[in-house]
Length: 192
Image 1: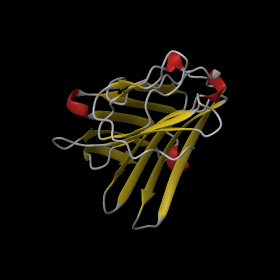
Image 2 (image 1 turned 135 degrees about the vertical axis):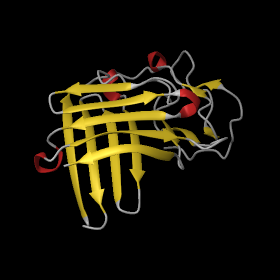
Image 3 (image 1 turned 90 degrees about the horizontal axis):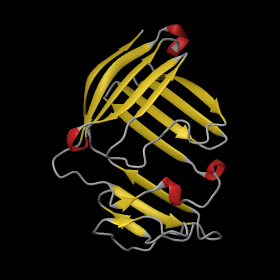
Image 4 (image 1 turned 30 degrees about the vertical axis):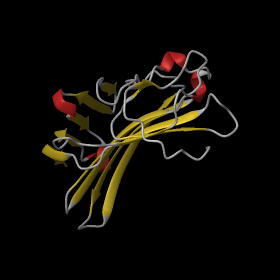
């Protein structure tokens, strides 16, 4: 990756031009880059997209991730118990996913729904940047199962760190990411 310029982007801009090249590189405090998957000039097998959420307390942590890596997609859920120093993870692979996991182009709108034999997982966008995550994984943790719903709510005037960087050898290759810390999380989780 070419070193990212210390340029703060302060207004909404398209991410890619009609040739599939980055319009601007830099960082922003909110998702101001308008991502359009159709403008990417690389084959579908080279597009990597993911969405990840982590909720934790002083005793437990839950990690949910949906990853579409072209040739291989993966849905994973981890439960960590800090007091027992143990964790349980289940990963469900989707061969040749090529965008079939339907990750949204915007991290503020759009939802993800995974319905498979061993997992039901929804990441649903709500008003004011909140996310509702519902999950039902009957076989997680030696068949104890994990079920629940969590609402992730950003604080007033929440900021993210959004970065856009170009790869050194290919002007059409880039990394676009958003990190949003400090959500308040409430809901119900049943493990076992």
